[in-house]
Image 1: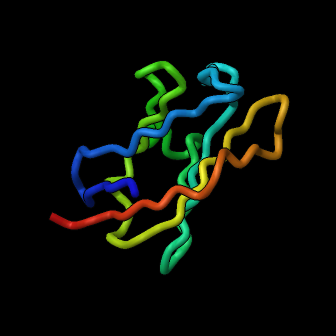
Image 2: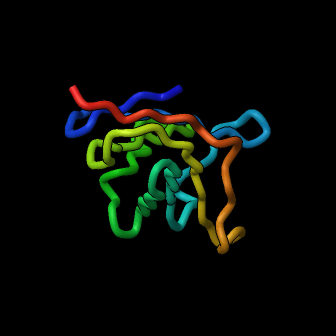
Length: 101
C-alpha cells in the first residue's frame, strides 16, 4: 500500500516498465490517475501538470497527491500516447491511503 499525506510534500512513486524496460515518458501525450474511494477523483496532467513528475528517470512517475481528501483509494494510472489515444490502463489497481498528520 502506498501512503500520501494531505497537504504535505510526500509523493507516491510508481515505476512503469514495459517488457522489463522503463517506459519513455517523452512518448506520452498525457497521464491520468483515477482514485476510487468514497468518491472518485481524476487527476490529469493536462490540467494538473505538477501532480506528475517524471524527472527521476527510469520510468518512475512521482505523484503529488497532497490535495486529495483523506481516505483509502484504489488508483489506476492511465497513460496516453499517439499509439494509444484512448488511454492504456497501466497494471493492477494500486492501493493508496491519504492520511492527515
